[in-house]
Length: 281
Image 1 (cartoon, helix red, strand yellow):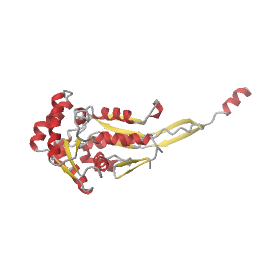
Image 2 (cartoon, one colour):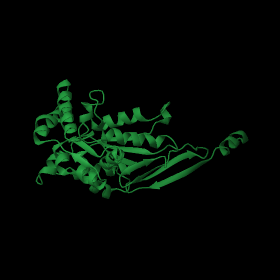
Image 3 (tube, one colour):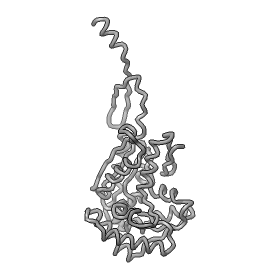
Image 4 (cartoon, one colour):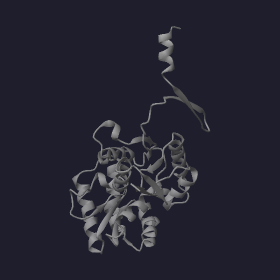
C-alpha cells in the first residue's frame, strides 16, 4: 500500500453502532463527521378503513412547514385492512376482537424505532390502553388531543362517528374530565344518515348526497347547543370539510397531524403526556 493511499485511508474515520433488538443485531457504518439529526420517526397504523392511513400520511406532508425534501418528517405507514371491524367488537362481545391485530401493528411500528405512533382510526381508540401497554413508544390519543385542542373555545361539542364511537362514550368520558359536554346524534341520524355515509366512503362511492346528509346532521347538532362538531371517524373528513359549511368542524386526525407537523418546526422539542402531544416545549 503506497503512502498516498494510506494517508487517504487514515483520513476517513468510521465508527460502529451496534444495536441489539429482540429479533436481530444491526450494524451501521456512519462517518464521524455526520451531525445531521434525522428527527423523529412517525409510525402510522392504517387500514381502518382502507384509505384512512394514506389520507393521514398525505395530510401530514401538507401540514409540515417544509421547503425541501429533507425538511419533512420521517414517517412509516403500516396498513392492515384485515383487522376486524371495531364498532362490531364494541357493541357485541362475541364479535371478533380487533385488539390482537392492532397490538401486533403497534409492535411492528415500535420495532422499527418509531418515536411516536398514530392509530389512524378514531373508534380504535377504544383499545388505546391495550395498545399502549404493549409498547414503550408513546401511542398518541386523538380523542384527548382533540378535546384538549377545543378546550377553552368550545364548552359543548357535537359528535358524529361510527356506532361504536358514539355508543362507547369515549368522547363523553374525556369531555367530562375537562368540564365539557358532548351532544350525540340521535339514533335516526346515526342509522339513516351518518352510518350510510361512512359505508359509502369506505367503498369509495361517496359524493354530493353524502355531503348534504352530513350537513343535515351538523345543523341538528348545532340546534341542540353544540358550538362545534367533531368528525369522529376518519371517513367523515373525506365527505365534509369547512368548504361545505360555516360550522366549526373538529377533525381529530387533522388536529393530530397539525400537532405532529409541529415536531419539525420551531425548537423541534416535543413530549407526549397521557397520549397528548406537546411541541416546541
